[in-house]
Image (cartoon, rainbow over all chains, first blue to last red; front, side):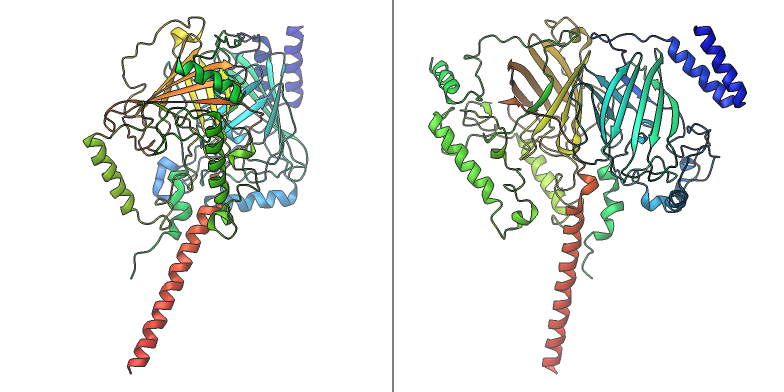
Length: 273
Length: 349
């Protein structure tokens, strides 16, 4: 059976003709073959400090290397190239939304919420580039992010609808075999997906699938649905890597004080003339 | 004997009052799947009991009648903040939005102060070095200018940097004093509602799973390299029987607790003493600032969740608008001065 499914994966990939897809099927097969260690209550154990290793926060679509958007930072602020994390390569924007994405990109230094130390939204919080800790209990799973102290509560048992819109949304989760499925709604329309201006509306619906694929990696897949911005649902996928340093821990990145001069400096009292 | 009686009175006073150690029958908390005493759920530490014993009060505990009267007075003071036409009223109408403590669950306590040691219920005297540092800090703040001169010269809470809730020590935040505790093997996480501040307490591996009697080394060393300084410090925990003991150091000193400095060490003790109560004790040890350590005792009461996102900075129109307002007022005052000077010149011609 296992062998057959593997073959089907290879065959379908061959039919589509995409090497990228073939690699993805192999990754999925590996993930299915792996059985994670269990927590004391018998669920796959995702506890730990995780981080992505890609350039998705610069641009979730494939992109070449480019200069720093801030001249003074030179090569240290330059954009590394990336192969993209969007399945199929391109985000299916509606025509008007595609224009807005271009405007966002052109004005990114003024508009990117990350620059203002705003909560990153989902799924950007996952691949923003800083570590996050998964703290897993029977009722709740916490995702605690270093950036801006962003935090998500995933409700496993006491699930409700989002009481109001928020930056990080309202997450309900369930276990499907080896996979933690997190369904998040109730977003505001203020966060972005990356520094390239990719965005969403308040109709955003995110479904994330966390599937352990080895002791120190998780296969992370996201389905994005937002009929106000996209012509159809689309997917991102990437691995998460576990921090194995013995002293690994989430440190404070309380960035509010780092952006006060940027946000309010022009309102500073000027010395009397 | 006297304290036993007081304890018994407390139980009659209100079922929701903080049980004292004498009154409590040994309570064994439910266990998490990995065997830790279970502190999980949604809690509040909202209280009207002041940290320090008010001047003129000499006893450690009120009678139930006196306690009720003290709470009533405190509620009155709180609602006075929202007197129509006052600045506070324009800022927040505490009563209208249910923000004042009396409209939701709060911890009742016969104690006249949260501080139990020193026995006079007051923060101990400062050392000479402590006084010097306090004066220096005040001078530095003064250099930044008046509260409305810039974002940086304003208060930490108005800047959405940090509020009173997360600590440590965890204190009543004025409103929304709500917390969510989640436990996993080796970890206790405490989410504070205010500014979604999270503290991850890493447990000593020798006590985190099944060895609650192991004692900490307690050698007083920094928990991580002393160059790593944080607003909330760095916390490490261990189980001593039913009690979670959390030690925190590596503070950056930028959010002083009643005048503490970066050498502050906070030792907290969380003990679940009933289905709906966690006894919360903390000791403040900062030998640079105070002549002796001091200890306070409060409680957390079980409350209804869930906790909603408190995106403070993202919606901080208050800071922006007050700075805009202050600059406009300065401009207006300058213009008025200019006109007055002109009139004076005209008059003198």
